[in-house]
Image (cartoon, rainbow, N blue to C red; front, side, top):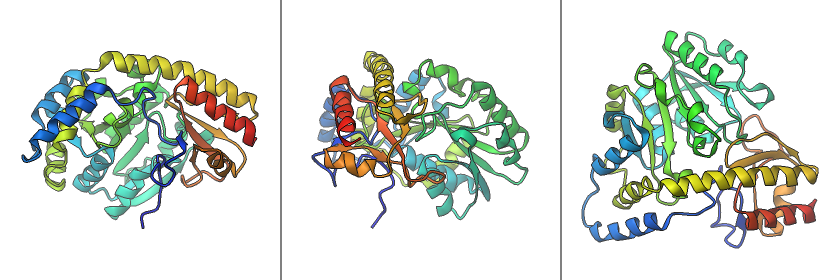
Length: 342
């Protein structure tokens, strides 16, 4: 049986209020649900293997050439196909961070060098790990589970170092949509000149579409994208996923409303959780990273609230947790439970 390494396990805890998965607190837009439902009338057909309409919509949304876009069955699908296409011999992964980077590299028998981040965020010491024998570096910005951003100057310096040393750089920007002035932290403007750069994005968090599985990558190295297509199973983006994605990209006001809500509620939760004596970190995304009693997950679950126990992240011990930012009513429920169990 596959070990549960992520949040969102509502199937084992169907009655719990889920604060363990970090999706848009506004829920899935109605237009997305309707588009996916309407597409079911075309299930007799194979999906468009080139996902033409979706790719065109993504290119317009991201202001990038269509030839730079690749889609997959969630961001995790693209992580695996990227590693399979590149076949790196040696990789660097920060700790703690998203589990799929390591899983994909291990599946490809790649040697992994762990970079333990001081103060849980990348610093200048990362360059001592990026030696000439390193083939690929994975970064998550903002990082999961901490919510910490990489300082833009440092991020550009890392990219330059990778270019000079022929290291492929993957930057996961899936949570950047919920960061204040998120575009200022993106490496997207440097894609054209940096063929060793791959930006990973997903519909999962931005549009609350975790169940339909749709992610995408942006990269100017078109030969690499072709190679990724060769190692990916055909029709990996379903008809409902393509239809939902096209509809979602039209929801500009919805995204703006969610960004405003997350900003307001993030401040509220940080203040309330700090008041309760929890050690709250300066997370900048739609989730909050904090420390508390080692058995806090179990205490909350008994009261019907599911938070993310982060002790299975490499580099973290018992007592580290993550909680999503939801709407005010639900956030008050979380605070009420925390007051009771603490």
